[in-house]
Image (cartoon, rainbow, N blue to C red):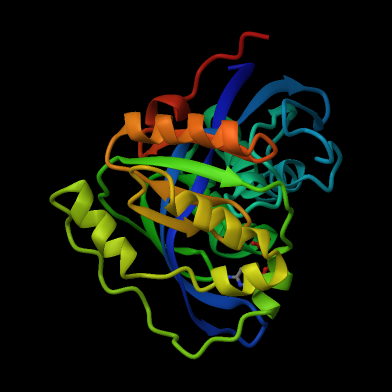
Length: 303
Ligand code: C5P
């Protein structure tokens, strides 16, 4: 295969408990994660050298050089697999950067998935070496990369490398970002927390409402320190909670993107329309979490 297009979905932390801290400073997490049909799209084309171009509505400020996680992940992949050949990447950036929904990590994971799908190292021995990277080098590159390698609902523990897939009902969702970039290290630094309890084991949810009720009892421990860093996040959460039909409003990751859950996709769409009218300066996108499989299936590149 000489070209391929891979979907890099937004990852949403439906709940995120900080359960401790390692000696190297990284925090131990217990998080429930789901993926959105909203995301970036990465095109890979066989080429003489690794290169990268970025376009799309959120491309501004996204580096197209070796500081981009896509090229960093591809370089690691090549080092670990002895891959011969190179790829030109084209990233269509639809997700706001530094916003708590895994954009850069999802792009990097899409690069690894794309390289595997293009046949750069799909022999079992090479796959095993790539898996070996997951626990180490890729996690250090971006703690969200391992969970984005297989973008399905999962419970994430450790610093992001301990993954357990779970079943969740499809969750109609509205994502909102107030156009404030939040630096993850600053949020972790501002964390002042007494409760280090892990998530209770997620049960099998019979209904959407049961799932939302369970989520409502959990937390995002990074929400308070993120609000201390960027107070507008509190305004976003209040605005989402006041939207008709909103069942739960919470921040994702280290912010500033927040999500609202609804009982039906129609309610989520109506909320998006209302919010776009009320807050045209905010980024918002509606889509049902758990519906990204069709969008994430590999497909040939057309341009
Ligand atoms: O890997 P990522 O970009 O998500 O992490 C950025 C920074 O956030 C890390 O360098 C670290 O300071 C902090 N972090 C942490 N614990 C985690 C993930 C990130 O303390 N589990």
